Length: 364
Image 1 (cartoon, rainbow, N blue to C red):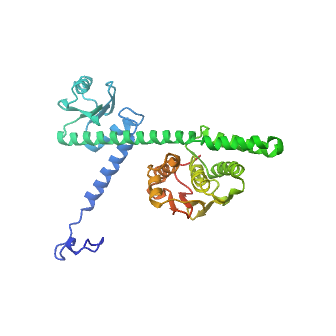
Image 2: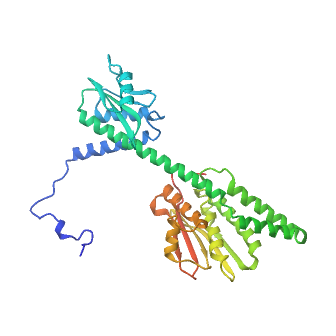
């Protein structure tokens, strides 16, 4: 039987064999190296000749204790930090590496290729009497940092593409029904028809407009109230709506379009398939330093395993919005801040999202 964490006697040291402590100076030095490595990785996010690449070269120079360090791109452009070697044609060394994709050098200069996913992306040039094995290790680490930066950029581009797709994901069925209802009211209730047409225009504008990455909960709640007003016109007495939001959370900044897909999912997959009447309740309250938003319907519900598949992006195409919202929340706030779905067949569905009321870098 596996032992629980912290209770396994087999992994304990005998009492007469004390654990060896790490000397304080060594620990401080290790922390300093890790901090420097993290900073260099951040400065390489835009590539070997990006806007902060020269800062990265300085950090690599300090890390190695080199006289000088340069980063070069595929065109041969070099960004130097520290001393450039006298009497050594570094441009020729870089050119050799770009053509051969193998390390080359001339004492006391070593030029090494930087590969990302087997693709040459640049050259690291180091000037100084240094251990070549250490320089190669640093070059490998720089290449890894460039690869992580590329993966992060790809993930960000994918997230933006998903958001564009989400903006365009307007149900033709809903649009047709909404316009049909509005048209039917033009003569009998012209004032209401005009009000609904303005709501429809607001809904389309908010869904398709080129907003920034973040907005406020106030705007998100206004958008879902507009959508629910249109759905009430379409579904009539079949749909009851309750929206409650505390004033103190209205100014909270959130990723754009995080509420609307959840509310649309509640109506389209919870209430519409039901044969009777249904209610959608939306609430937003402050809980300490967090804001908690709940979207609940008393519709048909779903199997919890299906809900899990939906959040993983493996559900039906009509529910892609939930997976999109979940991924974006986790990307912005961390893995603790994704969606929580509570559901069962015939028991309705409740979707809860929790976001910090204040998050550095998140602002409309």
